[in-house]
Image (cartoon, one colour):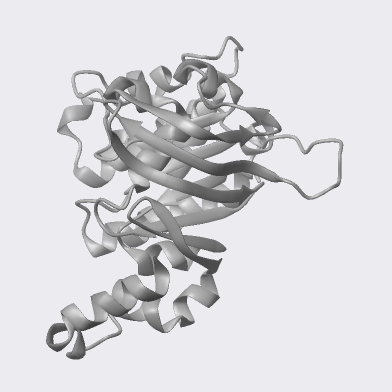
Length: 280
């Protein structure tokens, strides 16, 4: 492990009792005071783990991340029931900048890098909550994971999609987070780049001890790096288990891992009905 990586690693707590770093407890989320999106959702993320949050479009995965990171307010949404506990303290209702300072950084869907700033300036932007003098060392640590970024000295808007995703993850690391929320990191990337990005995610988790909650449409890729997974439908968790358990589950194979073969086309309506009856 590099010196910068050791510096970055979150220090373990004094208590040896196993407790989740993040607990989402029976939350409901409403948009515009009328649209109920999350319906009693609960999940836990252990310290140092990679946990996958899977589900179809519209299931509420991104809303879950925004509820955790405090970004619901930007879209007229709010947590109206339940609680979110991070590192022993409730964070539902806390402003996003304070949540970043407590150790959570979200990598948004679509990267959201600042295109008219350079890669280096984007990385420095990720350290906006910090006042220490180690920013330069952490930039070199990011370059050790993403050497291409060091070579790209122009505006970030000219980076490829894969390089922009690397920059978004690197910017998150600059905040020295205890936990990163990643929303669809494979979106728009080639299969080769997807494999590379997920390999780096796994390496960051292993080297730096950063806990990761991963929202991903590519269930196969997500379960290849996660230790545990949750499956969402219609705003709530309908199934969870270890990554191996989910990979071996016949429903998961059929609906998320492409294991249904030709039957999926022939029995789409019937199987959707069976899934709703079993899970909902």
